[in-house]
Structures are given as structure tokens and as C-alpha cells.
Amino acid sequence: MPIKKTEIEKGQGGWAIWEVGEMESELAFRAQEECPSDIINESKRLEWLAGRNLLRYLAEAMGEAYMGVHKDEYGKPFLRESSFHVSLSHSYPFVAAQISINHPVGIDLEQPKEKLLHIAPRVLSPTELQDAGNNLTKHCVYWCAKEALYKIDGKKGLHFSNQLNIAPFELQEAGGLTGTISRFEKQMVHLAYVVDKEFVLVYTKKN
Image 1: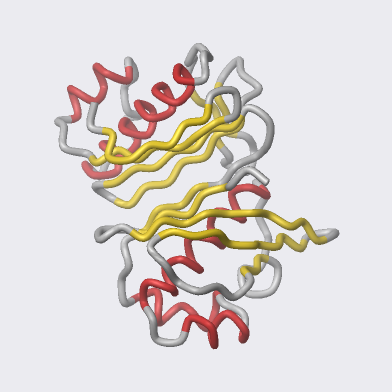
Image 2: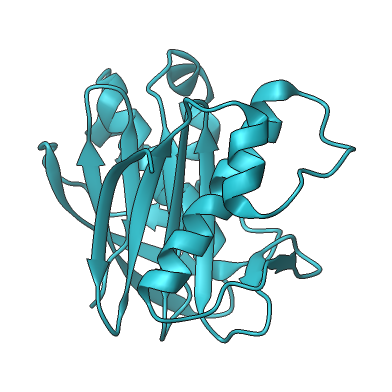
């Protein structure tokens, strides 16, 4: 199984990253699922199947039978016939997933690209923009962290620059982040990040 990285805590949850290197037929066989026919792009089909493989792997690691995935009205994924919380992220050829027994989770994986610097003024608050400066990797951590918060909330309509916020931080190879979701009231969320040579990963951290 091409698991690139994984972190699992029995009885709590965990996350894993898959690096796609298989043919679609092999991924479908492993997942015991077929990719929907309305997904045309080849990379997207591979991501979809790798994501199902990851969720099966994580569910079974938690002692939970994997019965497939369904999405709610907002597009948030859930395991069928399970109360576990899950989250998915794709940035071909990498796919990331997180699972938790007790609380909503959000995970996001991105490959640092220059476009993040161009969209930053629309996504980051003035404080976050100043903290990120011209550091592309730090911009990527901020972006992933906000995506993770958005997934934890699980509903649409949040404004990234003023309702999803990350406290300034010192960039390292790995570290912790403090985020805030401001919808009707402020919700503080603890996140963790990992900077790999090929991608940045941010995921929900147990308090």
C-alpha cells in the first residue's frame, strides 16, 4: 500500500497521505469501489479512488467497518453507517485523509505554487498578510489552515479573510497553529502542520 505518511492514535483517530502511482483498475480493486462516470479527468478519478482507499485504511485502523462514503447537503463527506468524522484533500499525485472518533476534523494538502501569492490579498487578513510576507511556504500553510477550518465548520458561506483566521506563527518543518472560526460565535481550533519538500499538510490536532 503506497502510504507516504501516516499518524494514527488508537481510540482517537489519525491521518494518512497516499501518493498515487497505480493504474485506475488497481485502485478500484483495492477500494472495492468504482469511480463515478461523471468524473472525466483522469487525475481526478485517481484522486477519488485513492481517497476511498485511504478512508478504508483509516476506518479499519480504528476498528470500524468501511461501508463507503456519502456527502451531506454542503458536500461534507461522512462514512456510511458510522458516527466517525472524516475529511479529505487532493493535490495530485497526493491525497490526504483524516479520521476522528469524537470531533469534526479538517485536513488540507497543497503543493506551494505562485498563485497563492496572487490570491493572498483576498484570503488572508492584514495581520496574516504581514506575517506571511513573501514566503511562499508560509502562504501555503495559511491557505491549508484556512481550508482545514472551512472543512471543520462543514457549511458554506464563511469569508476566508475575516471569519477563518490563523494566529501568526514561526515557520518550521512541523508545528502547531491556533485557528478561529467566527460564524455566530468564535470557535478556537488547534491545528498542526507539516512542511514536506513536495507539499504542505495541515490537519486538526487533538486539544
